Image (tube, rainbow, N blue to C red):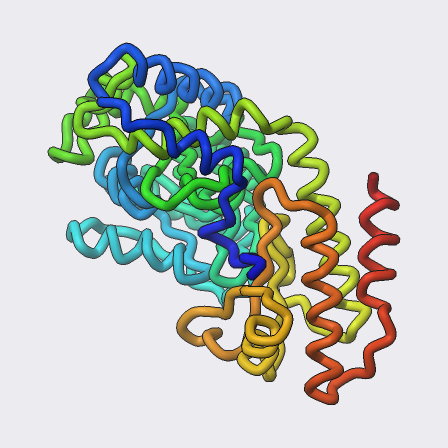
Length: 365
């Protein structure tokens, strides 16, 4: 079975083997060397001043970030995960402003600028780089730049869980960049990553908040290559292996090639791309036969892709592009989708999906 869901992603054999070594205790020099290596590599990858690794899913990092950095956030809600920022603010009875969009539509910088000019109590922006509920890419870099021009001290918090390791991110105006182990890093779920700017580090020092998700306590320990609580040791060892085998620039290039080639291939089959501004992390197709397509793909062609959530549960399917994916596997996915459309008498199979995929993949290369 080929796993092409947008997280968890499949784990390469070399990473599985690395994680299968005898368990290391997290309070040892042996494990600290893995931890230090990963810290250095993550800071380099994110181009941030510091980084934290938490034994948590990405949602834990989102909660920790809102509690630590926000008094009145502006929350961008273009899907299930933008909605999560709103829910966290509500749990803590925190005042917030919400921009609510259709799941295929991103806000523009002017809209956000107008809100910030009208409400000077807003001290932070919470936004997804890739809203994976519908595969939408927010123009975070542009929004962050405009926001900083209005208020240099506003904290820009970005959920980049399905963007980190997929594409190069300009973090010039980003203060908090959140990642997760189970996406482009091709690791098991269970570890969140938080990249931090100088402004974020100053606020962590001032805001001694929480117990388990106390970022001040955690930062103090992680700068010594250990953690305040038990580390996700196996995942960190796997991450070290990922950095050993991964050429990040090649991964960025190949991910973009796969995403564009897949998109053009499926468009040639008269399938509709759902978001108006698609992310590179996944291709999302809107189709009334999504459930049938996914069922045949899994049972007949051994390809496991994801459906939607909530209002899009039965009307979209999502194909992963994150991580190290052999071209033959990506090619089989579009070929299998064309075969499935033939099975459903939607379109006669003629091999066009493979042809268009290869033309577009190598044209970019």
